[in-house]
Length: 302
Ligand code: PPE
Image (cartoon, rainbow, N blue to C red; front, side, top):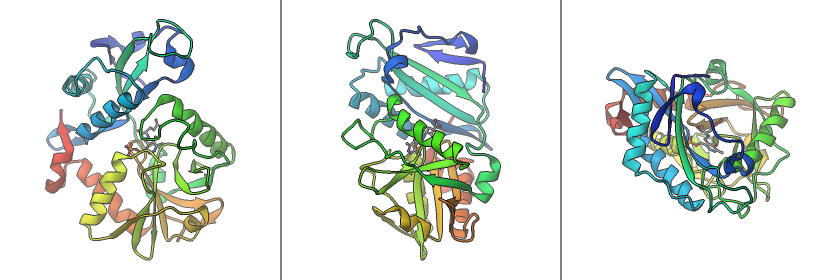
């Protein structure tokens, strides 16, 4: 993972020079918020997928975490496009990060400056090409998703991801590709960095948003599913309902639409990408690559 240039506080700097002080507040305490965005190659050039919604969520995360971003949404949008251009990136991943910088350590963040950076790089399939086609093996985590009143799930806060990293480490060491976290009551929430969908008798389900990150891919998939005339419902469920689903898949900017073929050694459906998952996945990629007229408004061309 490496590109040429990174945007840091208004300047384009060389990748190797994009450094911070070791006393950066966010490095010690996770006091930052970030976004994960993808750009896809289309016939009319590189397009950023749902950029407006990602910037909106970035500013909402910053608001929740009481950080004043010293730029406007339009500045950030321009900076993202300029960073893509500076790196001649055709398709890949975009990572804006707003973080408490260095002034003083100690938990009070208010004395520290709010710094901003935007990195972009080529990033193929998050869980491997093979995962997109054949599905992945997952494990219900022994780590509960952080209690809803512990921090904020609406905000994409750096420190929130410690919870996900514990779940991810456990999953990998158990021979799985990814974790599924339950909330403190035992209801299914999401993956370490993905929302989850399941299908039973032709109906597509996902969890309500209160206890999970309100994924932009999640929102896209709901709109796509409704457009394709599938029935859709939000529902709180326990782990066993996943075991007996016909199909299960993850959604996320990084993960895109990744089928799940196994959970806790239970085979899901036929143990491979299911037919409805495949239809939705195909539609999603066609839209992202600019092949669907109706959804062109989701693309922001560089
Ligand atoms: N839940 C969590 C916890 C999460 O981190 C993500 C995105 C999602 C749901 C899906 O949200 P969206 O991307 O808007 O559809 N995770 C980001 C970070 C992954 C990483 O490894 O870093 C991502 O996919 O970009």
